[in-house]
Length: 430
Image (cartoon, rainbow, N blue to C red):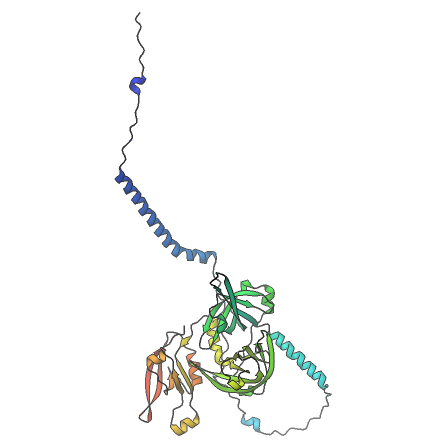
């Protein structure tokens, strides 16, 4: 039997894997494709986030919107005159009434009761007072952070359902990084500027009611405004509250000595209320009557050198519409003139027509661009007749930014006044 040698199968089944040669061009092309796709994906993601993020943020964290529009009651006329009716001057014969003897309390009791009532009124007014601090930070050359604040006393003028709105002097908020508002119970909350009026020097700061406790909201109240355009106010007892003497929360009592001096400002004339009280030269705060009603905002810029510490206030009646616009975050419309009244003497002796006499025109204002000049008399705005600067201011405050109006003016030419019409578009103050 033949012996055969066994066959080793591994000799012809051996497998060899050959490495595929690298194609650098193909690798570079693939890498470039991946890079382009990554850039496109990033751009698409950025664009998507720009448009979708605000929507998602509003859905997840909705911004509370005021439920009520702030609206102050309008007065019947720009100026209220106290008149005596003829029938009130007639003597009426009345039957004599039996006299009733009433025992009057002693002087000490009367004085004590009066002081108690005045103190109670001041405590009640502090419920609508709030301290507003404009806090600003800066870094020194030593890289240390310095913090400073400007403080002023404000008044809660409205509650729009989601916010308490505080009227305050604008100067304390200039260059502020943060705004802190301290209420009657010493609770402090962050605020922000709802609206401001540079010409009036005022601003309205809003504080979300969600930041305040129930106890704070119960203790706070909205101030009640009253008419300041009443000449019968002269001789009335009033209170200056806020910071009339350099201390926040301070109170002073006195009498109104005059009410009617004009303070000329851009597009408005304010009525100045003068008192017999003396405080610091730069007071801030408010003037109120003995019912706690707001009569005016303490004024800093009118006192002469000899009366630099005399307490005066701008009447709230002329400021009310501006405060309303700021409270609703509405833009303040600018016309751009300072003016005054045409007196009977000027009308009779010089033939100057009645209207708003233009004293000056603001640079780069709508009035200047329309050609208004000092010495012009504005007699009509739209279909409204203008008899004085007070009525011009009243009607301008009813107009909105961007609104186009037609003015009728009287301008002196060759010794006589001639009528002409001008079209003006009101602009945003800011």
